[in-house]
Image 1 (cartoon, rainbow, N blue to C red):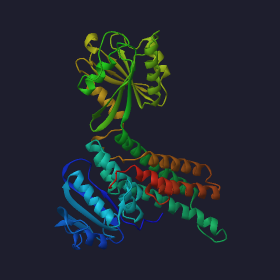
Image 2 (tube, rainbow, N blue to C red):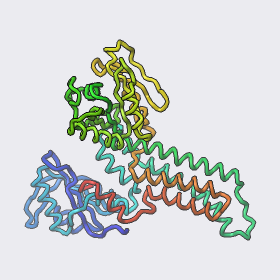
Image 3 (tube, one colour):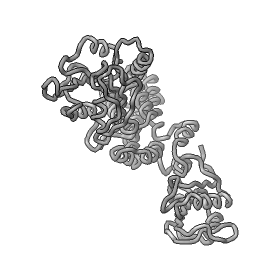
Image 4 (cartoon, rainbow, N blue to C red):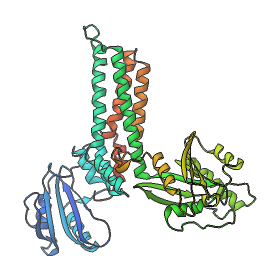
Length: 447
């Protein structure tokens, strides 16, 4: 997909009023446009204060202009930035003037797309630009910045390089079977393949933890009526989000709230109490509860600390999907006169706490952060997207199949080639044009 040769322009700052607003222009030759709107051609990479001109030589605004000559620019093309007053009308006038001089309105993400197509960024770095803009926590912003700086890409490139080296050894023996080429020792090849597979799995784990920083961990609060589910949500949020009542069935529809814990967004869903009931409206709420549990990452089953897990609670636990992590929360510890604690029982984490007094809430937060794979500062995670994770999973499968057919050189070489192709798609070496369109369409206009 070749870079566009036309000139694009867009307002690069957020909508609404502000002290400063920026109009950005990019194209292969901006000299006619710059002469038309500035009347001069400024020294590249140096901000100058000047008047912005209309078609009759009148003044549209008074601000700063910065010109970048390609390829030494963000897009790799000539780029002009007009820093004017941040009123919507003024910025629209400047944008219309650029269009009058031959530019067209940029599509969402088109500036960054041109940066990718002109080899200024690889595809993972380009996606990190959008992740940095969309970051909702300081941890996610730092992770996105590391990906933008090329840390994620460097890991992928290292994996690709190892695959290429291994493919060279295998394919040389296929291309020149009559030559006396030294074959890699079978055990050495297996060891190298295992090491490569482990590194792909490691990258996948780091990516999965990073994806949680992007979208958050989906946590469903479930249990029988009057177990304190709404009280627990209110305690975790630090405000009264849900109605608390001793009347069973008070919560009939889901209440959603995102709460940040150590920079990790946790998307809590307080649900209707699970019980047998003739109330048709409550039945609908219970049905929705099970639907949300099916899509959850973590299920908090709330039980009473005084009675522990009763048969009704066992029934709920038995219906939880295997892929959903489980935390059994023994609430109302203040009434049971117990001590806050956290233990692991089989595949369940069990917490004793009191939503009313707040005792033990830190233990619950720690358990959820552990399930999210959180580490202080998030220094070991990538801001991975779903397509990155899919490519890593498919690459790992190709490597696993390669181990199974290692004695059949043709099949072994093909699985290595497919694994390399999947990894290379992450940084954009092999990517379909329609996928590029989908990726960059999610960017804001002007970026």
